[in-house]
Length: 189
Image (cartoon, rainbow, N blue to C red; front, side):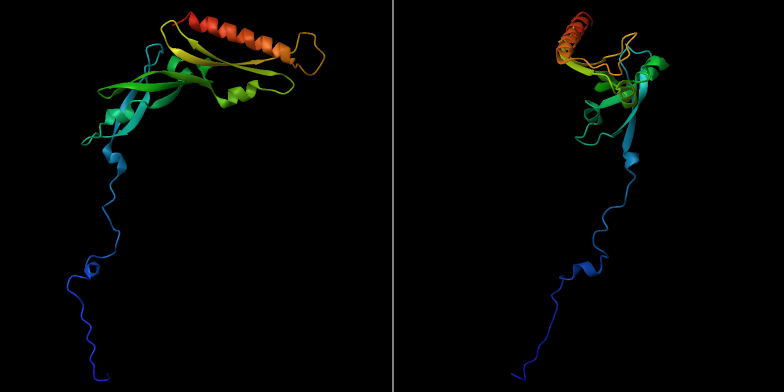
């Protein structure tokens, strides 16, 4: 076999990547914010300030409708800003976007919470914290789950450092809390 000749030839069209440059270059980077629109968030009429902020959404294109991506979003706002009352600055109101009209998002009440620093200032040592949760239905048919916090406090002339409640007392207080919350929520809209 010493007189055999080896000839290597490349097939035409097999070496495509040589002329194209590096692999994975892809499309040009487009600024994501150039494809987005701003929408105003409108609070319910129960609040003094109706316009509470703005939200961002990708523009409608093809089958993607921008309003579908807005509906159901939950936004959070400070009650002090919404009612122009600085005494309520520890309350946070959550609103859910229900409908979109033009460039305005109409919201409905979704929940209320307290700021963490306010809760931390209420909870102290040497006292009992009593928590209660109640599911109630208002007169206009809304179902709410209400949570309540209660704390024991010292009597006027008390010398003892601690103000702990016994389990039986805690149960009685919790029942009273439940009754009050149910009564108050079922008589208002």
